[in-house]
Length: 199
Image (cartoon, rainbow, N blue to C red):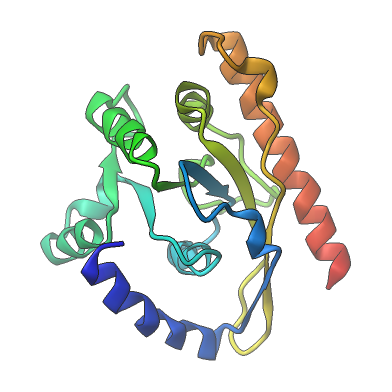
């Protein structure tokens, strides 16, 4: 964990004064080894509750547009975030993501690609997250974020790690990425239902 991240994370607990959080099953995120966590995305500060789901530092992939303001770009980089261009095959971003996992760290990603401003529960997932999962052997863990409302308790549910054993030793071709993307989507739907029912 970087010093800046370690210093800033306690400050973000002030967030929980306005948005009280209940984190369910945080023990499902491994304490060691390469992990990729993914979550649904509604508002810009979704990174804060996801970061609080584990004591490990999470290295988030963020759209390149978030790096256009110099101070904000500096802050994101200090926190371990790195940009990705969503409209192209951004190889530097892909290499950075693979490097995070090869170094036994935690990669954070929002596979919807952008905040969900639609009336649908979740937007379609991009396949990049599946590529990282298949290409590294990382443990893949879904996280569901319920709706945040000021001064009302919100819930975060961590799902069970996905079983991707069927793809071990196989190439990350298009069919495999499509199948894993669907598996990731279905796992998020499952824990969302479980979380909402438990309120």
